[in-house]
Image (cartoon, rainbow, N blue to C red; front, side, top):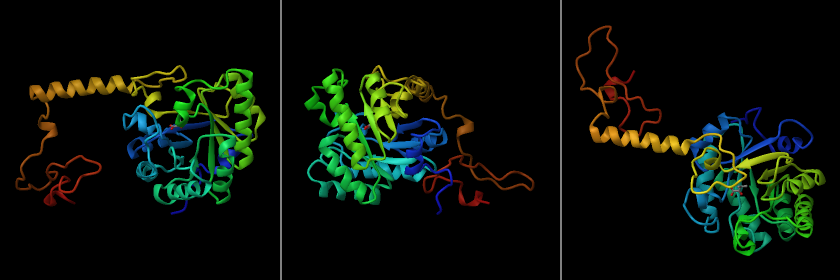
Amino acid sequence: MAPKTDKVTVPAIRARKQGGPKIAMITCYDATMARLLDEGGADVLLVGDSMGMVVQGLPTTLPVTVDEICYHGRAVARATERAQIVSDMPFMSFQVSSEKALENAGRLLKEGGFEAVKLEGGESVAETIHRIASAGIPVVGHVGLTPQSVHAMGGFRVQGKSEDAAVRVLADAKAVEQAGAYCIVLEGLPADLGRRITESIDIPTIGIGAGPHCDGQVLVCYDFLGMYRNLKPKFVKRYAELGDAIVDATSRYVAEVQSGAFPDAAHSFGMARPHTEGEPTGDKARVTHPPAGYGPADDEKA
Ligand code: KIV
């Protein structure tokens, strides 16, 4: 099938550095959410290894595997028409060697349906970024707070707060650009450093907790929708309180199941009965993706 004309491409993302609206990236891990975020106009859907924390309930992103990212990538790719789909390269999928990194990046495109990969690190991974990008695989960089280095950083801490540290993060961002990345995530940095980096490099910066001056922003979907309620970092703005809505809907459902109010006649099927002329045909199961054997009965099909 030919790509849609407004499909978000790598050149289109790069061009946003020169003008146009800022880039809106959101993490996404499944088809239902992908369909909604795509319809809402997200430019980039990132299957982040944050999945380890918000989907798998782990304390860090470290255990996430390439196979798991591919599985979720396929689900997101099936439901996405416009947004670009980017994969995180999980911990130890790119650190061992450039060869191994290229092999894994290739798997993410071939098996996960991704259009680009993102990997954490600056100068130390520049050669690897170059290797992957030279093979025609678009690369997103990620510097500053890099969650895969959580133990080395002593926790999820804002980076680049002193001038020395800021200079190192800036050097990392430049190395990532030089190596051939087409955009870069800046995570957990003072807003002034976010601005300094954004003004110093020619590829778009996408911030998360890096202030308002970046060329785009990224948030974890469960965070901006108010569903991940264990933690509310300062940089997260909630655009909905779906966590509250889900808890409320669940308690109403539980109460109606317990009282017998659900299901009522409107949500129940009737027996087949002889058809009278002019009468609409029987009960239709109102399911959009009917599981086998659960759709309209054979004698109810048109
Ligand atoms: O894993 C992730 O979701 C990320 C974003 C928060 C940038 O890396």
